[in-house]
Length: 298
Image 1 (tube, rainbow, N blue to C red):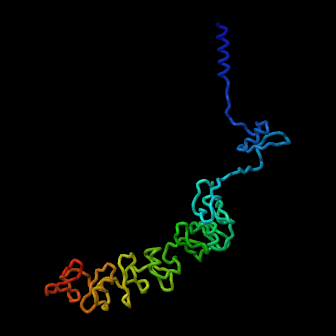
Image 2 (tube, rainbow, N blue to C red):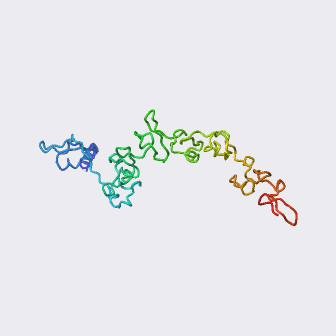
Image 3 (cartoon, rainbow, N blue to C red):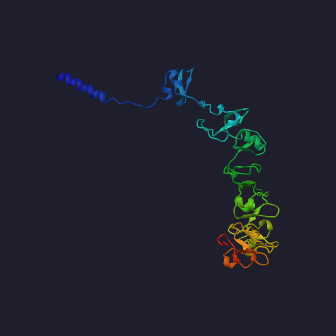
């Protein structure tokens, strides 16, 4: 019995003294061609002359297969601007050579017009030589694509530095803008100028020097009116004396707060008791009563 116990103890001691290694094999430790070529992730390559496995000196390019997502679309349905869910690093599809395929970038296509580039992908425009991707203004290297950025905001070509920058001041807005509205739709404090383009608006209506600028004050808090010689606030007291009826005075301001006054012109519509001319009166029971607004009933 003691002998068996001693043998068991010796075996247990021997077993617990063993160490195990979980370290991955190196290429040199792989002795068969089959094991060697299975371990491409280690960069292994089988030398058929030396019959050994070693780290390959030739870069191994893994084969990547993408799902046939874009291939399923006809031209009208090819999602040129929409990201696909299973196409690797490609962000969208493109219509190329009569088929919908994966979009790999704009610069691969030599097209000289925007419609040609847009036909490939909605993300592409031309720089006059080849397609470039719609991006931040600062990325455009030529003047031709320097129009809008990815957000749809305008760009401006700086002829001094030959760079494309954001059109974030009035003087950088397009020279084709010819109205106050066009300028203010982009930058609310800009107005138009003679010959086209935009400038900073005057603070007050009286600061606007041109009739084409006489629409708003700088903050668009007061509408303006051109009286033939100068720009004034569009208030009832500044209405021309050629307005001689209640209806014409109502149209002088969009809020309809003006009414006519003696000898032409307009005043602010207030109360019945404030009326001074018969044009704003109505008769009831042989007595004149005043009618200036909807609350003044005859």
